[in-house]
Length: 281
Image 1 (cartoon, rainbow, N blue to C red):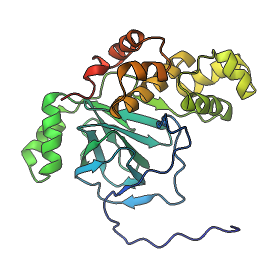
Image 2 (image 1 turned 135 degrees about the horizontal axis):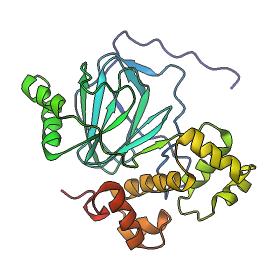
Image 3 (image 1 turned 180 degrees about the horizontal axis):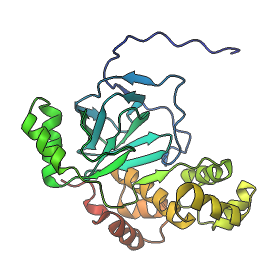
Image 4 (image 1 turned 90 degrees about the vertical axis):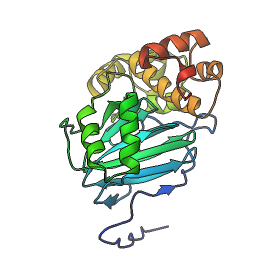
């Protein structure tokens, strides 16, 4: 093909977010998560002026393509796991976290496991959030999100929800995206095989750079050390595999932990509960 066909003209008010079949993953089928790697947006991301409010079931691997709204939006997976990717990285939310998506942010969704996604469009921004942020979901907030997504005309439920919104404590659910091609090459290797045990020096050799340079890039671009970043990536993969129903022992070994007990310990310290409770109701 020698040229690029111009995109079709879209109506002034496109339809609400639509589920699309997932694109074939670049990573092996045994490891379907692509966290941390910003998805290349289309030339003109879809623009939906009013953010959709309602419930949307997504099958495993289901996706909502890159788009933006003029409203803010809360995305909450009542079941399953949802990842939201922007040019700044990927956020992963399970049942005890929701994601705040600021107005104007180009983003896309991907579901892992059978996901019951609840979305709420908002014009108010009570927390003044200017970037995607994970929100803590208490039992009360969960019920309010479900109510507001199913009954968007209930002003009391919406006002109570807005008053109860709180950022989630600093948990490893955001995996920042590297921009330097050397660091991105390391991410690609770990994304394909999170159990890869090589130290940073080994990855530096594979990326054609030095351990010192990668250490500096992790600090400057990601705001964390390489071990912290690798642990976040492994936890992202673990959430995806758990959502797909993989046993805890299998998840531990496929994501790079030496034993199930070591994985459970890291998971509990990260999320406040054991992986066995992650997707039980």
